[in-house]
Length: 260
Image (cartoon, rainbow, N blue to C red; front, side):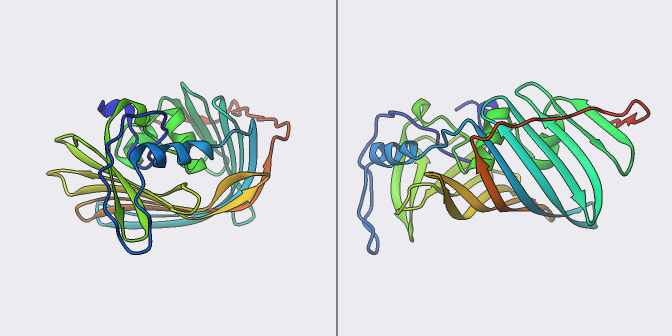
């Protein structure tokens, strides 16, 4: 598995990976092969053309001994595989606009009157790992950040979930994927970096059915390294699918660039 191809918070895209029926019976869950778990997960993947949602986001971190915490509301619009647009507000104030495409990440702050245009290095610094547009999109949809067709996996029952693990873990990191036994959506994606005391976990507490599409109700992202952490809680307040959307985005000419 190539390091640049995965984004540690998510997990299984799938197709047909040759599977070994390496499963352990546990509790009331029935043992399933890797191939069947992947097939069931893939069968309920997101296939709407557009998504519009209202989000509540709580962000907190502890960097260099300083704690930061902020909450804001976000209007999200997504055209599948093309663009992710966000409009954020803090309290009653408009706070920022953001536009993400497969090649660029751009945002501007209406409070600081500054803007940023660049690649994905900003998000990579926050999350602590490589990330692509597809992986970011999948993160928001509760889908895999990895293409399981390229690896062989082992499957077992872990408490109340089905867990898939690469048959051969990378020496630098270990990845674990947990699936809900009822709908086979992801419940958690976990990455552990060996030798660095570093973990990244993305959890999906619940899903809501919108027009036969299962959308996460709540996403929790926890990134930790030694005594530093970043926590992001994303609550979906409303969702509209397959509506024609617009993504207005214009950086004011008097805004100053952010130097990272």
